[in-house]
Image 1 (cartoon, rainbow, N blue to C red):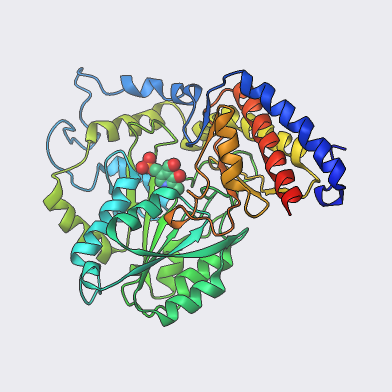
Image 2 (cartoon, helix red, strand yellow):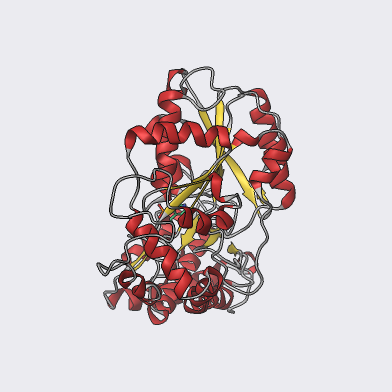
Length: 429
Ligand SMILES: Cc1ncc(COP(=O)(O)O)c(C=O)c1O
């Protein structure tokens, strides 16, 4: 029974199976559980990996960098030289092209858009806010907070499908070629949130080279999971900065990353990179907003990776903690949903999420049912602009925070919910 394709079952078989599943669901519900898998947060064991960092900048005269900067004082707008060196390989640029910020790359993305709205970017005929309407391409499913930034600034979002090798480039090329009000695109190019896929070399090249009607079109390249591999088999991402430069479009891209899921999400360091022209303009504007970001935290980070081993070795420790959770989730999906043709998922080689597609029209109901049984998931639709999944099928699973036992229980309940909703839908049809 377990591996039967749902559509092959008779009405009576479906009803019997539904009854069994509903009984199982009620038993779970009686447990009064409260399991939260809604946001991709590191678990406490991951946070402990960086505990020592808090002891590395002390009052014993170790508050100066090797080059003599007193980190307690004002200044160094774009970040300590050592911090730029730390971020350069993550962002795929030279240290001189890095601007180190505060603790959140999301803030840097938000502020970059806010500045573009108020003042435009290099080559903008006028500030973006002075257009009657501007639009962004939003490959979806994607990161809900990117979409929230667009909503906040009144930027119209165009939903474009995303495939295993990246966004639907044929559609994107046609759109940006024709429409001068399309000013940008959001991209999470590696181990993407939420699918976990990585853009192919071809997709990166086409993004860098495509003809855009807006001369001030920008790619917001949020490489949040650049170094967050789960296995030894790393996905390779082509360097967007080089691709844009080679295409003569070096001003086209803003690149972002942070150590939120390397050290502490609440006290990491973020950075961005851009062409010299973009960077100069950004720094001139930043210099009005601040005299410099938190250099004490920058130095803590630099020292931690000097003393505790390389970034790569450190990320392997994260992977050792969270890989079993990803493996368990996939194992349970296979066990409970595999072969039934009611759900699809990818096994990511990195990042923080697994994305599951139910049958069309089922996601909202699954999330609601799971919630009633004590399992909180990211809201259905959240992975699409305006919170509207046109297919009502995508659900983002964030397996990192719960313990393995909690996760196992939560995923089993989730799978029961997927089955119940799929059968109900089948019967109704
Ligand atoms: C794609 C993506 N970008 C950015 C962030 C947030 O980054 P930060 O903590 O640097 O603001 C997240 C967090 O989940 C994310 O998934």
